Image (cartoon, rainbow, N blue to C red; front, side, top):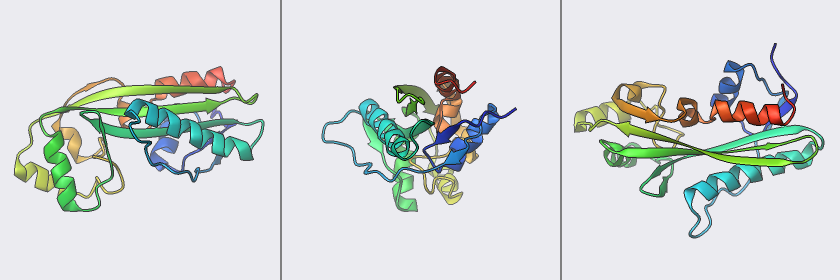
Length: 190
């Protein structure tokens, strides 16, 4: 039986599919149109928590008395948030940066209960990719799997280069399901 008494404040098909995997299907999906510019000197952890909370609050204002779930995921290397690459050449530079190194995916998750109680968490997953050759980088970039996301998609061709994941695999895709499930249960979605 799918649990449906909540709103997903995200239009991400990945987040929707992840929720369905664990038996949750939002009754409504509504993206939040907010300014996602990081504040000056804002740390990545604080940024993703703020983004998730602002998205959830924006949608909750329109749907009083409903449970709202929002999330935001970023790729962080050396304390810096990586943005979406505008073209293949920039993406090749990103892959060279990630190659042979550890990096982190941070997800901010926010759930607002029917009474307006706000719960926010940040989940970190560490990923180590093998040292990639220039040909491997070129071949990966040619897949275009990276288009529309920051860094790469773990579900595709790049998964063959991942040496180690420390933390939640689903966090890399966009929602740390263990934490999300517990937060939704805490908000009364059982």
